[in-house]
Length: 315
Image 1 (cartoon, rainbow, N blue to C red):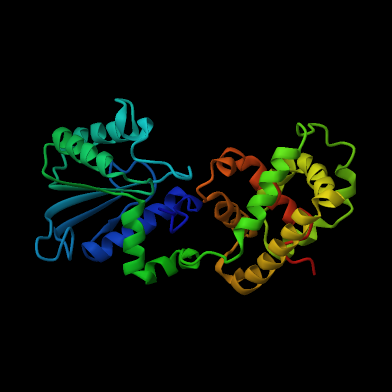
Image 2 (image 1 turned 60 degrees about the vertical axis):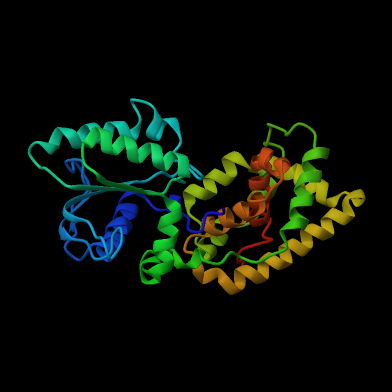
């Protein structure tokens, strides 16, 4: 299952706001909002009868505590040991905090939202753990799969947080660039660690202006230079080698597809780094272990496209 919305691109506060906005739909406008900080183990609180959670026929009643647990790690899972399994896991520590405040602030229901994947087996284990440690029956955890459903049901929320632009992917013919990158990875020598001989040639291009035109952040551009720039000479030589003419044409076709797709869909994205990372995920999100094992090179290729002015505005 592919990830529908890039929750990892939100910061913790934005994700908490998203969770509270969804909670208002499920429970009611009475969901209280707390500022970021020492929240007493709660991000939001609701007292009364829910609108439609877990269903309109049998809604929760009483006092409900909501928590939002966000991660920036792509494809993180609720099965990860540091989230739910170990005694020192995030979930274990939160349940301990909740029990500490329970004597002074009793509650009837507990709902935890996370942007982690939630496998069925992990869901059962976590629910049992919550009930046992909190000694309440009405507990639930919402993973990214159900978050996707909620945002599809309530598209105005997705629009409010700028997530609606990710509902449909940029369309381009991924197999070409996948083959180009795979062949390059097989042919290349060990990647050079010395960049001093050719960095100057790229500095001749006014990248600062290009970054402004495309709204690429300075931090992400620094990331390109520090992690990918040293690879670009090898990619350039690979694409210029006459024996690789077939792959050069495949690369050019991919660039043409991407230029058209970005031109049509650019308003879906704010900073251009999200375009770059979106393309990266489209290439890697494929049932091919070769690509998954060379993810670094895949990202370098997409960085090369930007740095070489194959994608993104130049004027």
